[in-house]
Image (cartoon, rainbow, N blue to C red; front, side, top):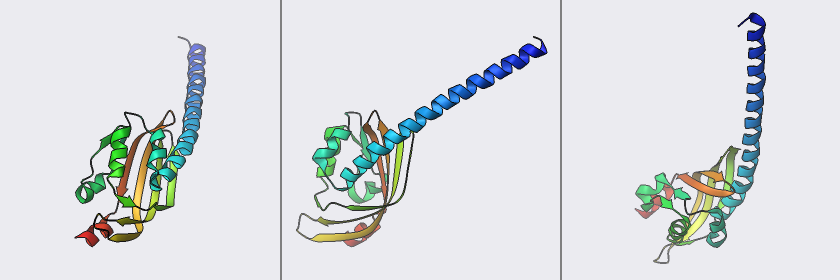
Length: 164
């Protein structure tokens, strides 16, 4: 291969690579916008505890999990719409939470929300607990307009201390 052929091949490879990269980048940016739209609507319903409305966001393969709640609430990974909703209903009598989002971003399939929640919860015994500024982060994966994965990380120490 002579020098001119090598240069031509290098130029063609460079042009094709940049076109593939820009197509991929545009696809990711478009997907990021869709993720943002779906995730914002979903997270609003999630923290308002509107379980009937939120079910439209799940599939039978969707998962929900809060690893930080394992030792406090005996949380387990939930798979599928029915299991996720049944888990939410097991939380008992909770007021809609005010989610003060401090930081969020949306990239590709993922949306990240971090902030604090304020809510009240009434126990089976009838005692009401009010919680303020509970730190929580939620990571949501959106595919084809559905939430296929939701993971929460919360600082439940105020609740845990109050109950013990």
